[in-house]
Picture 1 (cartoon, rainbow, N blue to C red):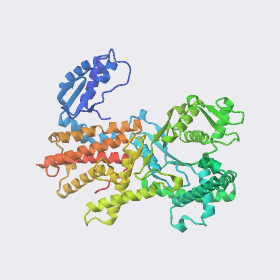
Picture 2: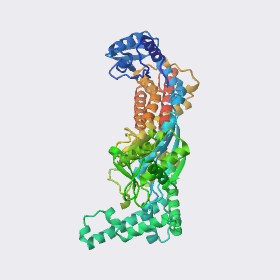
Picture 3: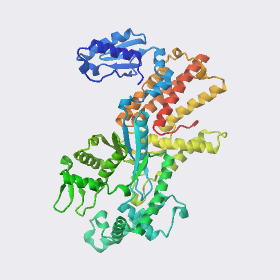
Picture 4: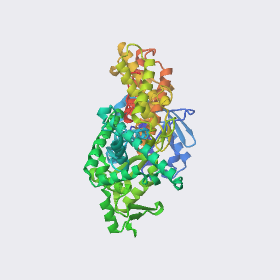
Length: 600
């Protein structure tokens, strides 16, 4: 990571001064932004060195102040308690940041010995319905985190596990048999996942009708829940029988299953393409659901698991409780499959760590899974992570797949596109073609959606407002995109005037205003922000930074004319600063898998 010479030399000074008392711990001086009410651009916090050096924080700060006051890169030093505030010479500040942009961007990459092979599983849709808003947040978190981890140098393996079997799949199949009349995506003109999702809703409508009839005919059932009564209905029993036939390899059931799954997966692919979602490998639950049974049997033989008197196999997880791994009839439960799938992913790719992007309602499931794998003696089980995320809703309310009230992903994409289209048409003149307006609107709409979903820590449950997210002002994706588009416009106008900053020697000393320096200071922190966000597995850290840099640039743009600066030398210097801002914003948005239109 890029470092100022004065800070590197201050580290060396401390190492020498405290050579006899520094314990063998890894430490470095990480500068911070100076508070706006204080003089200077950067701050060194000496409180954090008290234990390391075995000295008072104020004494350490005094030494730092004295050393830095004499340094040629510093033009101002002040101390408040154990905080040392630094004012940098303009040439030093810009040389260490925007003047060497390739180095600045490259220093976000970790040293080779810190890079890992990381497998991240996300999306994991069911083939009984189209993807909805919850999947959109999952996909956005998964692909953006994968991109972020790769950006800092890790080797990332992107994996999807499609849940393509089970009772929920049979529900759609049974409804199709009864009510489909041979319809296909081609004959109906509907996406395959939407068509199959219709039959899932149709099944649940019929199930509800039959449950209501049961309760009418037997008042003692009035307080019973749907799950409890489902297997007492004709349609519920038939769906269970269809699942049994599928597991026994019934030819007719399997053919229908393959056909309907192919429709859904083709529909998923269209959704993924529009979002920019990619995977290195896709597993199917139909291929993996039996994998864990042999592992459980081995664990039972080794005494890791135990068998109940009824034949069921379970594991004692201490405070987490007991967990059944095989039912009394020998059939597996969902965690059994996850045990097997986790082994398979490890054997297939040998990652240093595995990450699951799954909603926080599965917190207990993953705690149990990880504990089981530890009990089985796998050293790699120490590096398994559940990236849990909260609910996401629209102002219109919660979603229920079985009632057909979900916020469909494709419909949401269309809404975002149309909102962006309206905004673009208001801003574009008659010289911009409809094709170009549509292209911009897709980039802006999808970018606004992703940016807003990434703006919050994943654990946060959020209310997503499409109209607010697509505004060009405020803490939105289009606000950051617009900063890039504004710089593009500046460069186009400069080219028309024959002004080429790339071929000019930049006099960075000219950029001495607080607004100009604030841009360079923000740029200095970009590599650290990328690494912090990756370490925390939290893209909101990067989102917050990009919003801050865009705001800092806009303040500079308002106060410091670029093309109308008083002389050509100052024009080229400010243009070079603009160019650096766009490069960082574009790199950051690209890391979040968000595109940038040429103009807005």
